[in-house]
Image 1 (cartoon, rainbow, N blue to C red):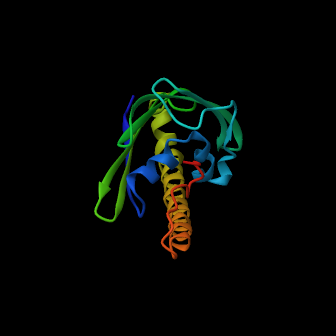
Image 2 (tube, helix red, strand yellow; image 1 turned 90 degrees about the vertical axis):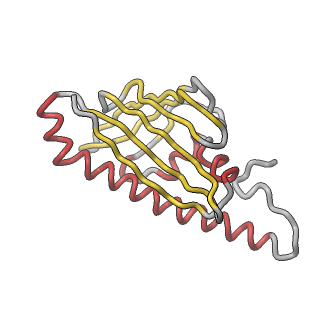
Image 3 (cartoon, one colour; image 1 turned 60 degrees about the vertical axis):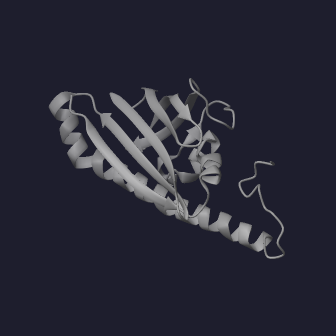
Length: 175
């Protein structure tokens, strides 16, 4: 079994609290997943992650074949990081760290994914021919979508602050 690593860093022009509010809600995962994966949550989830939370969804990662993926949120330290691990799904091993760090003009978000495939040499061949590039396309899409989402949030916040009023629920938290 070979362990692979994918790391992406994204700057978000919002506070760490706004970034956390978005990423800690599993429902938002559908919004940052490419449409060609046909992502669907398969059971109702709470809108805030917690240690031990189970998230079940279906997607079509390869050849339009539906796959059930069940993840567990194994570690949460609000608003700095959380970890999801695949319990059942297409990978032999999947460990995804979501890290958030306040920077001068926003939040730095870091994704670190460690993963491996089954089937020894055949799995490595599939990784080099298909999986690696597909994962990169998924994270490319995610980062482009995040740029759009957080630009829109900043625009809403700026539009609502023209008269000096406060806009605390740009993500619809109701707080």
